[in-house]
Length: 453
Image (cartoon, rainbow, N blue to C red; front, side, top):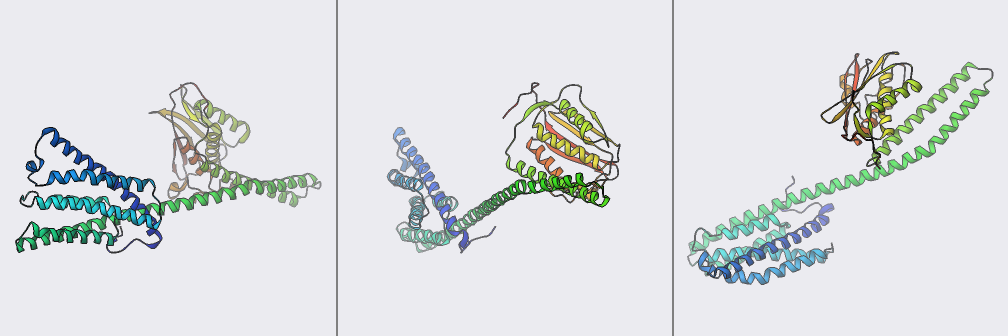
């Protein structure tokens, strides 16, 4: 933490911080004055109801009269600070007046402690007690620049020095009291500057975070615009290229081997580009969505449907084996998004497994959670890459056993979707022995699927 002992905050944050702490000072002065008034009123009502002399009770002459006077002065401070907080603005003159009011209030409460100390000087138990309390209160509750702190100290010291001879005639006692007041005001200065430094550092940190958030928001906006261009302006040319390649393939009557190979490469490149574009758009869409529509489903039925689709349409190179539960296991999911999750996990398992290898998909439930495991016995993930498998554009991205390329977004999308379902996903893998991805989702108690918005 940077300590501002005799200095102000940096120029770029100074004006904003000053407006901020003056507004906080006004609110604190309003609260303290209200509390002070309540305490004084309680004292006065107590003396009236019990009909006793407060001055004699606490052995401080004139204490009751000074409290009675506070009943008229404190509401003035409360009213002024209330109006200033309601009409607060960051104009230079307004801030100056506001801070002067806070300084005046601080000097008033310090003077109350000072007068109580002088009136009670004959009682060692009370000597400087109230004065110390109010000095501490002001230093902790209010924020002042160093020159404002010095001003309060100077006024307090001069007032104390002028009043002291009326209560102490001994030169030795006057000198001792002057030493004590200097010590107290020095402690007040350091305490006040510490509070100022703490508040200043806290404010600067908040402003830095806010600026970073604004930059992130702007960057996200730019990212969305770029992805919009990718989605609308790149898909069409890719589609056109792919269509032309297909037409050329049809018109290649001589079945020229070189031409056929080139056309296949064009179509494969278009397909790869389309997958990358779709992944990027999916990432952006998930980032921007606070949530998505969910419905309650039995995971047994859902996973069986996913596996059936894979066996029918997507692969014949691996054997998918599903082990479910005897009873239905309900959870809330977005079917389209969760289909994307399962497709990624299954395609990854197939990508890094030999043809015909068994891929195990298991469903269990325990402790209010559903556990979906996708296990393969394929290539496995090196230990040093395990912490990075869910990163965007992950450095753990590798080619599949049959040369399949990856941009490292698939598992990032998986985790993104699972997190938005209130769940989590982890991986356990041993290189050369295979990998197990375990998805955990909160289990639903209700047995009836009900669509929600």
